[in-house]
Structures are given as C-alpha cells and as structure tokens.
Amino acid sequence: MSDDIIKNAGKCGLCGDEIESTYRHDYKACSCGNLFVDGGHDYQRYGYDSTRETGESALWSSKHQRWVTFSEITKETAEKQAEIDEQKERVKTRRRKLMLP
Image (cartoon, rainbow, N blue to C red):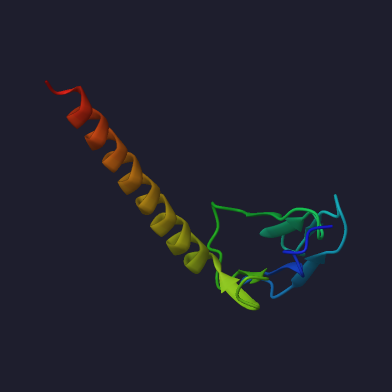
C-alpha cells in the first residue's frame, strides 16, 4: 500500500456521483459512465469520456487534501510539461556549445 494515496476517488460533474476505489483493481465508474477510478491505495488510474462535457468532474487529491477539477489537473500537467521542455532545450543548447570549435 502506498503512503501517498489516502483516498482514490472521483466526483462526476454530470450525474453527481462520488465514486471511490478502495483496493487494488477495484474499478469503479459513475452511473452515467462519464468517469472511472481504479487502483485503491496501490495506484491511481482514472479516466473520463473525452467526447462529452465533463462538467465540474473532479478527483480527490491526497497532495492538496481537496477535490481537484480536471481543468486544474490539465493546467498543472501543462506547466510540468513546459518545465520539462525548457530543461531539454537548455541541455540541447549546452551540447551545441560543447561541439563548437
């Protein structure tokens, strides 16, 4: 059991269901099928129907101890990716400088 995952849960913005996965391979989906969570306290896997409006669907964040919306998750992921891309570019620049005579 991971110490980081206190609660593996989701709240659907369409049907209003709150679902929680409590043990490994405990796949749970909301009643409208828009959102699912899986993994209990061992791993966190989640998903939603990207062809539908997610409403205010959210996941429980052990890090923040609150519900976090998909838009917040997307923003945080985009910021992390921009940081990674920036680091890669710095490495490329250093390598180019080292190869110059």
